[in-house]
Amino acid sequence: MSETIRLTHEEINSPAWKKVKAWAEQELVLLRVNLEADQPAERTSKLRGQIRSLVLTLALESPAPAIVGDDEE
Image: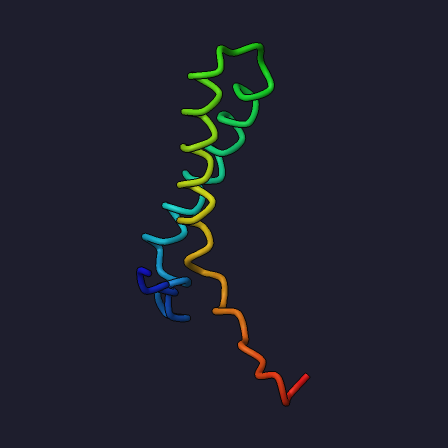
């Protein structure tokens, strides 16, 4: 299993990340509009893959989920 990386507070607030984030969010809107159109199954699959990649990229700024042990629930 690959290691999940997260951006630091400084990285999230950097101009470069803000530019990448804005671009990714715009691309997501366009891809989702195209996904709603009547597309062949192959094209739909490709669009979903592109959307998944952008969603995972944007998730880099999300904090890692807390792991709760059985005795802590």
